[in-house]
Image (tube, rainbow, N blue to C red; front, side, top):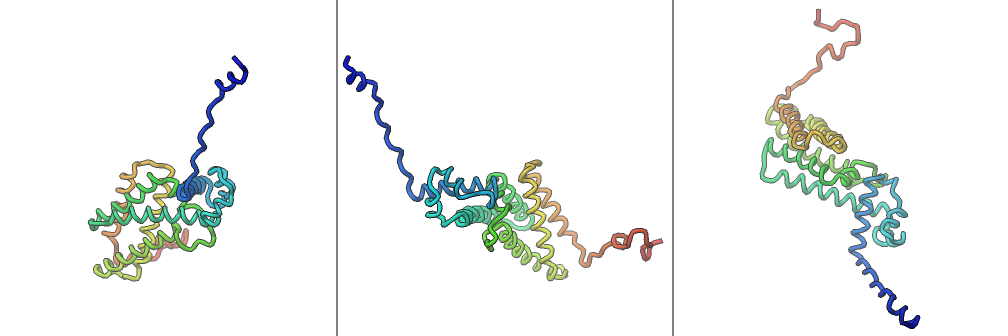
Length: 230
């Protein structure tokens, strides 16, 4: 057999060129990669260079889609915020009183369970220039809604409605901090955590004192006699 014929027999067919991504596909790819890196390393620890490297594109491609790292971060956070709000809002539908509180707590814990990277992004660092679309702004919105509900309830019970904001801070803070704690420990199960959170919130609110006061023993200097105590 001639050398040329043998070469023709063993020649591998050319591979078809890999299809290029559309602009929409590339944008979604960059968002997925950015989301993963922001969750793993935080905003400051993530660079445009690494995002581009993981996507196998040049840095200008990232800038073309988002204008820079902050733009990509904003898109990621906006999506996570929309997801959390959708879950919480849907949990409020067609439910009242304690069931509504239970569903809100469970909705947040379910988001932590199913969207761990997203929650890590929301509770970690963000650009200094960010004034909205952050976990803090989400909590502030929740505090405002809870304050409105508590003020109306306090008025009915002859409590001072002006204190509703303080109680709203305490309640939302308790749920938020517990969710951050559960992010890493993941035990007990979310249903148990939600039940205990609601137990504390609901039963605490149901037995509020109209004019609470500290026990004198709590505020007396160490070693000094307590007024009115033998």
